[in-house]
Length: 289
Image 1 (cartoon, helix red, strand yellow):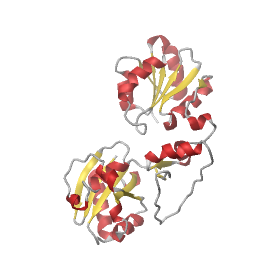
Image 2 (cartoon, one colour; image 1 turned 60 degrees about the horizontal axis):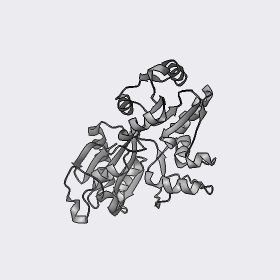
Image 3 (cartoon, one colour; image 1 turned 30 degrees about the vertical axis):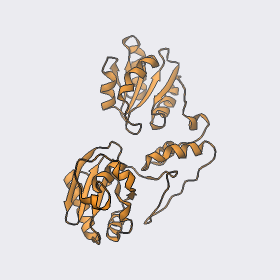
Image 4 (tube, one colour; image 1 turned 90 degrees about the vertical axis):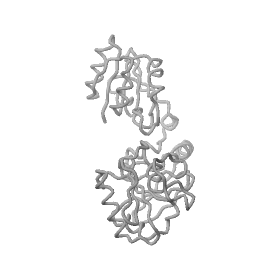
């Protein structure tokens, strides 16, 4: 992870000390310092008052899953306070600063109560949470009781409700797949390979493959994703139709604004299409990150 220490000029000596400890870069505070840091770094340590940081980052915050973790260190070097992204690296960073004698002030409910969070479990186990909206409900439940974690070795199909967090191997990209009825698994495999090649994405960088729940029994699609040891996620109609897609689609005939593009976007972290839909015979592929 890339880390930067942003400091007022008068605290430069302490900032240098923190940066050395964290193997981080240093940036002097300016009007646009946080904007630059948000675009470049995964973690930000701000050596200044919390008020300055709050006003600086408020317009920059977009999504906790992609925003950098921000920790404020009080000017007297006594406290490290995760300001945003507590479950996404800020708590861990604040606790690491305790090695410098800086007291971490943790406010996320699960950690305060000595409990795990879904995010901390996924980080510890080396997985990515694929249905991110589930974490609020699961974390709330984890405050009151021990929530079991089940590991299912494939091949298999899991149908998870909104109160179940699903974790898969880490990856940056989501591949959306649309296909005609009765397509062969060989054609789906070839199309996935062609789409990834065109997008410049390696197979081991794929988080998941996504399609409409209407394709739940499309054996060619199921077999193809199973053959390449991928994770196939079925997206419900409401979620698909809530996505902002750039292309018109014939999927309106089945009540959807699209398949490949909205399915890829629905599971992606950054909601960015790196490849708009491409048709490969009976299969349509789109890639998002």
